[in-house]
Length: 539
Ligand code: NAD
Image (cartoon, rainbow, N blue to C red; front, side):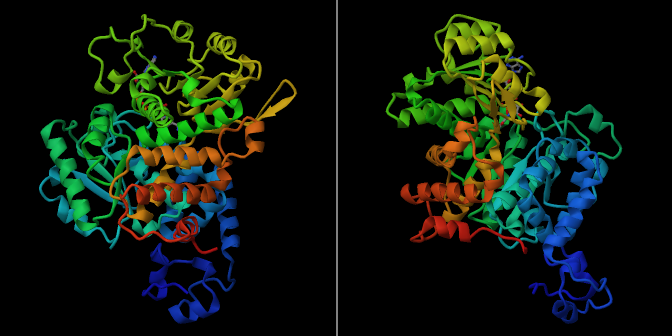
């Protein structure tokens, strides 16, 4: 029975309690719904199948996304049942790659207000907006300023599609209760000319605010959100480079927060590296990584790999030398001038190289990690060079969407004669090569960010130190079976995401307890308690 206090047709307009034709005879009688529904009572599974059949009629992913968005707004439980039971199928619709298109069309397809819209014109009054939110408790906020949405650049207010999509995954993957999540867009204007000229654009029609007024608005938002919900986790999402690193440094030790583009990506990639170590039966300390790209993903991953090496006993200065960056101007070296602060720890004493193949020859890495969104950067020459340097080269082509991948899975296996330890940012189908079937898997952030949230919220953590991200990476790699490794998979199947999230969530919570960062009591059986705390829609 629904806990809703509404009755009659009003229940159909409440996404939290609507069950449509799944209301049984008793509920229909009690809520005054007799005559307002067709007589048949469907099971949730039948409702799920009806939606799947309707979704299958749409060819375009964006149309499927819009239909799912409508379902989210009309029957929250059914939406999450569908997502949980068919994660593989619908995650690419609710999140990348379709969420990019959803953002680009956000103002043109806007129907249902969801979340919080804070604009620079609200400065000084953000607390009032936060008090308008209907949620009594919020566990997780995902906030963006829309400046760098995926690889699509400045999307302004339209970037709101990302926090909405990401919070759907917090719920579907890790059981964060949907009524306790809040997507937020901070609208400080946009420099996107197309949107500024679009009469249907819903954001502020002005150029981006930067400087002290921007900082003050972010600060006011964080202060007010924590005033109303003191334990809330704030996840920064898709901020531009200039703000992403700065905001993280400013708040990471004071506030329960993290940046998924930097830290979540790092944890999921390190997990893939740990899995590769299991295949190689090698030590992380023997590895050297060359990154194609030097932005949020690259430096996040490089920092966490260095942390993992330090944890394994290597001095930090030495560990940093095991990670080398290559950006749009070539190899990042000590001689380079005006390097951004996030690149400086990785500016090593190396000769210059302005093409990636030369850099590979100079650095002689055991692994290359592509995170520059430059398609085909891992050419056949680069792959052949990696294969001549290493018996089993680590090749991670993480750039999204698929069209931006540094190489396909097939190219990686063919280019290294089937020896690559491969992971990707976008999904690739299994590859037949040399009489074997390789099953590449995505280094998908969804393996970790929902679980990081679950663990932090469960423990009532006060902040998220790097040890939590290391713990998440280690635990994720441990969940990869020997059979997975034997077929070339460095990650577990995405279909196992609920179990994976519960286990990683417990590891993250354990880290909070062990480091004196938890404010909630620790149950005896942590893993069982974390799993039991997860929201489960009717089904
Ligand atoms: P970013 O904008 O912060 O960084 C991009 C970097 O690429 C910059 O350092 C830039 O100098 C470099 N670059 C641009 N052109 C280049 C060129 N021609 N040669 C060499 N370097 C060049 O972006 P980000 O957040 O680091 O994301 C980068 C890519 O990684 C995106 O495609 C994103 O989708 C992908 N990504 C994947 C995952 C994942 O698979 N789990 C997670 C995060 C990001």
